[in-house]
Image (cartoon, rainbow, N blue to C red; front, side, top):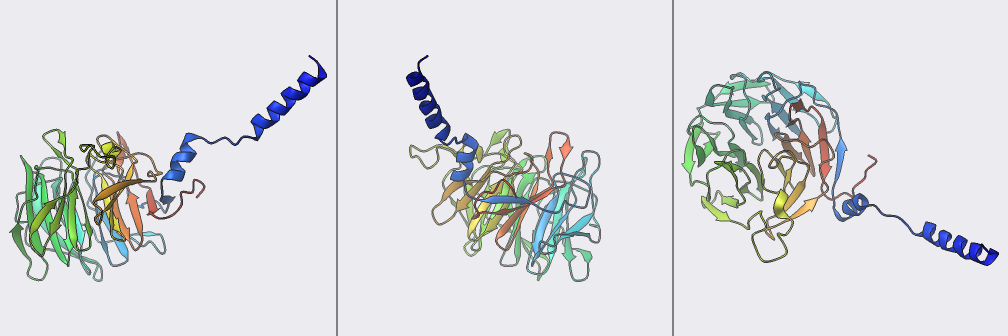
Length: 336
């Protein structure tokens, strides 16, 4: 080979090495917004299908299934100091697949399954006294896999499974300790759905009915006791907005709301890590940075301030005790 040819090959090699290389993962993360940070592990036994709620600036988690036993322990999480503190044990039968919601001053747990029996009992937790009080039983049938949400300091509980899939909705008034049946959610019956609250309206989405994953989304206005069907969460239109919606459907998703938007994380038709953000003002979903912990289902989701949290859950026979915080507007950082 002549000196001239060698010189040309060296110049070509320099040009090739000078071209930047981008991997597809990096491009995907640049396109998606949101960042996850691992926090202090949950101090209790790893579990799935626990229940959680928020009172003020602290979160509470309890009950659940370890793969061997149902639990009745109860814990408080402080996102500022980042520790878990064990609290008074839930006084009902140890269970999983219960519901929970928090008002401005109290928390509530009810329904669920102990491996043999379904329940409709209902309990109130006072964080100031660190004490539980049994309240009027849930007025619907004993069940598990239901959903719950709090709007204007009233609780709303419904759907789930007794020996039938259900779609009824009941309102709980803490001031009078009474239950009132409200208009049933539209669409199909379902269990293991997800729910979140945005601007004093409740949303029920996902779930399963007789083996069929549900792809409808319903908005509830407690002022009128009316449900409004929103755009489907599946690719059912001829427009482009729902082309990527395939991974929204499923069951056992963690849900929370931040800054006027709702979020679904993990769960799915098996286990998953996808995160979706719903904007009620546009009735559209966009995908966010995927959950950075292990893929899982049956996790607990909650939000405090401008951050969402996902903790516990399971994948196959493995049960988790990690907790992750999510900033939906932050730039993805793979190094934190």
